[in-house]
Image (cartoon, rainbow, N blue to C red; front, side, top):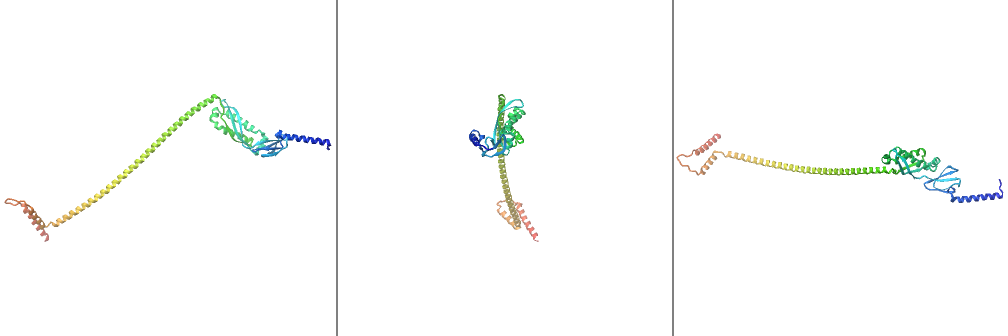
Length: 336
């Protein structure tokens, strides 16, 4: 088809009008940008005519067809979703409410297209926000208020994490649940007061138990000190006793040595005395001769200053004389 002059003018006007619209769209609508930016920690996802494109761009500047291609930055770093005001009823029928539950999660980059294709940009509403409501209600309906508020409260975080991750792994593998933080639920004021009183009583019991434990510890410490002191005294007594025994033993040995020395000395003296007596006896035996006896007799008579009166001299003098004569005769017989 060949256009005339008017046709060319008409085409030029259309192009200029399109350029003006395009230029104004750069500021009026982000989806009209020809040049757009993907922020760090995100990837770019694109829709054309409502259909999700498989093209996933990395952070930086990129180009797209205006008006036809829509762009959305998708976060692939760790993010925290806060689910607030979650009402639920316990097994006993008491209504409680969780003020806030935080879910730390991340969308894996390699699963961005699959996740958006199946669940859209608001995928976290399906698998985090709505899922938290469901799991909390399931947990509360299966447990009593005592279990939810006191006994099993420390287990709710881990259970929510496990339940969320199990369903995400099965249906949305690109969503990774990193951690779940659950705040203490809000319970009716009257019941809360009862729990506070119970906690006060429990605290008093714990304080009493702690005081008792401290007292027992002090008593045990005193006992150990007493045992240590007694053991020390016993050891000291044993050392002193051993010292006394050693002194006694030393004294005994010293006495034995002295006794041995005394016995040796006395024996030596006895032997010497015996030897002296024997030598004296032998000397006396050698001296016992008639001549010596007669000499001794004469000396005795000479030394005797007694005077006898009467007509008869005592026979003792003659007896001694006779003894001398007898010994003399005996000596002569021995010589023969």
